[in-house]
Image (cartoon, rainbow, N blue to C red; front, side, top):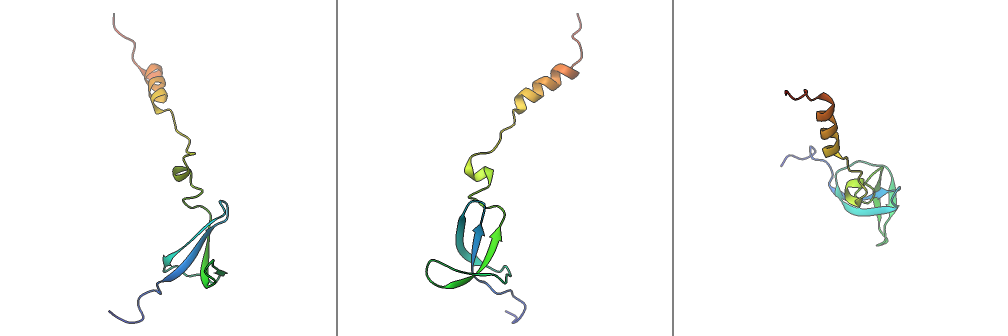
Length: 84
């Protein structure tokens, strides 16, 4: 493996401020911010706008679209009249 071409792989804390949720994982992301974690160690910190704790897909608060009703309305509006 060549030296000096690979990014630093280290433990990083990701924080979702909107959901008051944070987790520690390994990443190559670059950041200047740090935070003291629950184990007493200081880790680099990245603030997120959205995570699995606040995204509608993961929380189950997703707005479902009634596609069946839309299709029926489209067919009703643009269908050709039936021949007699």
